[in-house]
Length: 399
Image (cartoon, rainbow, N blue to C red):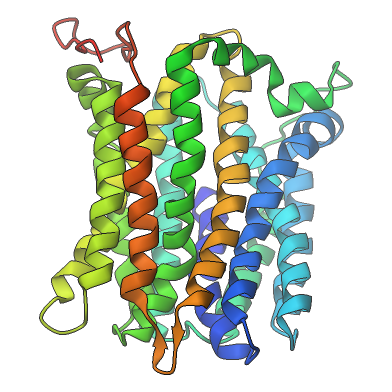
């Protein structure tokens, strides 16, 4: 289930910008690409309401997930038939509204079968990363990034997962429990904003999603424009890096503290975009690889650490609401802003040969630098934030 769930996402999402740039010969196509990527951010903001208030209260999770994936397969197929970027955007938006709830539903199905989710879930979730990597390797090997076949492959796998979902162990609906829009969004976690350090971190998390959106939306078109061979396959090194660095986080979290972890993540964003700005497929090819591999530090040391910090600040009573609010703010609000900004920036630097990528990559680098300076100046967490279950002599310094 997890392998196919993230294979679908990785098959169409990474290369969508490359597909749109080659398929829709329209003025200002870069703005349209940014808007298309914003569709997933919109869906991220809406899906908590669907899952929290409707899906898992009235329907068995595996059945509604199966239905959503089957409907999603139809929309992925329809996306290949669109002949203008405006129609394509609406297809992607509706598809994203169907797909994003399946992330929470697949997690719910997995957790429902586990006796010790803390130990068992990571070993299940890692198959999602493997699915994303497999999608990139296959698409890169077949050299089909600018073609409709990325969407066709995603549609086929979506059909397979839709059918498989109906055979998964039953995850019964929770019933007509009290629910509201505010609880689905996680507004009870607003109490966290009384903590100034957490409020400073929360704002930084939203802002750092702007440079994040540049990578998600434009790394593949950039590498293809530079004529990197099998770019989608090479980009999976970022997911391998992510999987490796995540193993070190619990130990570093306790040893060096949350502030230094977050600073390392933000610094990696700056380094990544400097590498992209000066990288090429000649003597500086190593800089392109470095920019890809830095994904592990960029993502894990900021976002995974951020989720852990949020959980520790929230405590047991509101931790689910806090994680929901953090996701809404980052992958929803932050990515929505970032995708629209990135589209306008890339469109501004169109040149006869393609794009002025050096100046494009300096924009997210400067934004990441600004967030880094803001965080250094204002984030002061007085108490130790620790991960339970590690040796007591591994202590976090005051940050």
